Image 1 (cartoon, one colour):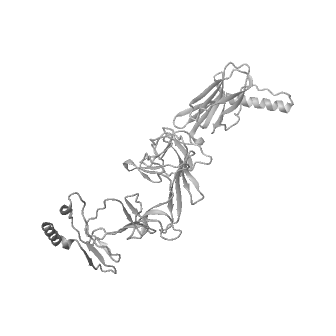
Image 2 (cartoon, one colour):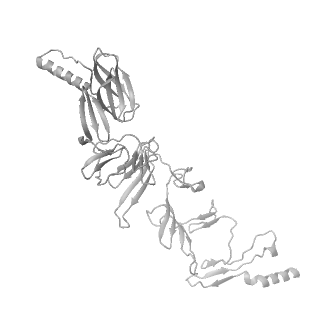
Image 3 (cartoon, rainbow, N blue to C red):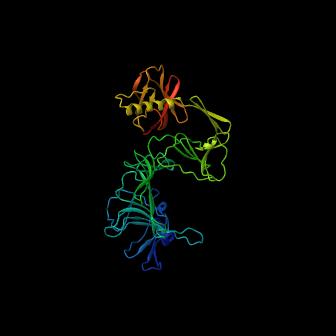
Length: 440
């Protein structure tokens, strides 16, 4: 017994100053209780946990100048009650929840910005949210309101971000049941005029919407649009239907306009490239390069001489070339017209064609099919209707077996929209030609 008492006296004498509280001033109204403690378990029981000896006083705050380990769950807040069930590691329970991160750096150059996590507004009828607040700047850069759907914001593997999806397939993936969109809102806070644009897509089109000016759609792309429908290349070249434009505008296919082509007049000839066309600013005439020389479109001065050999008209053109035109079809047509006129003037009951005739197709323009009427004399052995493109490429040949007046229904739905020519060829001679236009 004496030995045990002697040992207790030694322990108290050695550790006594470290086992009791000391109250000091903290420069504020409330005192701070500093609890000094030591790990004394080895002297009492090798299997027990550290023992902390501290007095308790409702009127003081306690300051622990050591690392604090809590073996269990912790409840914090004025609304915590004794014996409350803690279902999480840390429970914050009160009507004004926030966690402050106060950086106490004092050395020059060290970061010292303060942050806080704030839960809900702290006034009546306020908003419900989870937010990160920049306390120093008094701003809230990150805020999540209550009631959001699952995966409203999802950060997946490889740093991919999903909006409305837990499986983002690209760096930014937006999923929505009706027209996923991105809004670009210049709100006027920097002094510039307010302007709002939307970039959106749905089953009808991908589009850019000018929200400020009546929600117009100045740019649209429909589904299944072919590759390279519109391309912009590094030289400043624009391609339509091609990925390799060779000039400022390179179009693969036909060009159509419901208005006019506008040429800026040039005072100097452009590069001598076959097929090049321009408006000469000196004489205000349109000219093209035929591979040898510049030719004025519609200028009769390009014809050096004209000679008529029977029904064949020969035109000698600048550059040493000549063109021969057989006028027989034209003469035959004129004869037919004169005969018809005579029949009307003389009061004949029946008007009959004396030569082959070709009539304008109807409807024109057309979408899928069109009808072409004709008259083939009965003494004709071979008759052919030929359809070509504007460059003379063959589109279709149709044999005509019936004689007299007739009509052919032409189906060229497999051709592109544009302008085409059709000819009537009788016994190897081209009698007449017409123009047809295919539209959507």
